[in-house]
Image 1 (cartoon, rainbow, N blue to C red):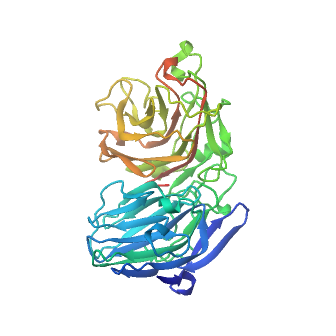
Image 2 (image 1 turned 180 degrees about the vertical axis):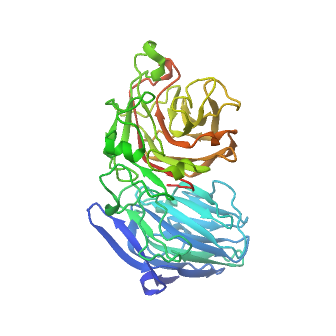
Image 3 (image 1 turned 180 degrees about the horizontal axis):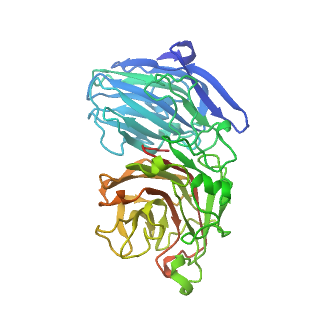
Length: 497
């Protein structure tokens, strides 16, 4: 077993930012661009990480296999290790010529990702040491990031590990070849946390950051948090939004949302939809807590449905000062959602069906709602009892549409009602007339055809929409239920966790 210490290898520096429970931010310097080559001799090439990483953090590394197929891994562990069982996370170039990762007791992959000899692959590994899970994403020659695995469990022998202090490379003697891995290498200069990024102290493209948070939320520097409700970036960058100061004029301005609401919105002024302080918030800001009464349904049901609940509001990217995003041909939108627990402690009851946020464009109020001729479009999601997940599409007029929207299920993927945060991302391509959707990093709809006519209007932005319905109380839950929403982001490129 070979052991090195990152701080002893002088090849540039990166900043590891550790956000503790204290308000101050601690930082340590370690080497970046450190490259290690493992040949097919079964030896583990260990390199220490100091200080150790805990909570939720992101690591970036490049890996170049000399042959395909191969049998080689890049792994993270607590302390240096000399056997597979000692590692918490393992990313493998396998004997079938594919890239996969270890999930609890076996290797698995979200899809087949082939690798070629002599080609460099850029990896982004998001680790939640507290939950003993990790997600792996890889970018190959195409420049498109693909999900290797999302929310994989640490190897079962390491299921109690809560910190990472070493990384290693190994090439098995069963297949001839070598694997070179560069920790902190590649073209990115910061970790891929969408809302609050811990940036490298150097702007060099050869250095990267590894960011860590002591809670289950994503990393963010305390200096990057402000009392404003949204850290909306300048034109050309991503827009991010949270729920600090929800439904105040400052929040409405940052989001481009009418406050306290307009004719097409509902729920904004209700006690059942309010900002809430959640210690597990993905971005460290307040989240939006939405309450639904038992048997509640759509507001449009009228007097025959006395228990409407949930809420809906429209974002205008133009009003938020982001005409660059409103006019984009391809737009990504991502948010986090947590279903339950309910007020009585029970798991979330999905009832028969309910609405979830999506993108929209056109005339407000004419983009959905069981109307025969839409003057716009919307790409909300839905749940269908018990927990099926789907795209709920209202295309522009001229496309095939049923009266109350087109349903396309996410295959076998379902909503998780486990009281934990999960993230949803969708990307609308107005030129191609397609949509992609991801759930916890898994691609659940790929280049799905949504028709034509989306360029008739600028993109409105987020259609925040959540309620049970249908138009009868039978659509609603049997008990009072609660959901939470957080950390919205909009970009012209893939956002991820």
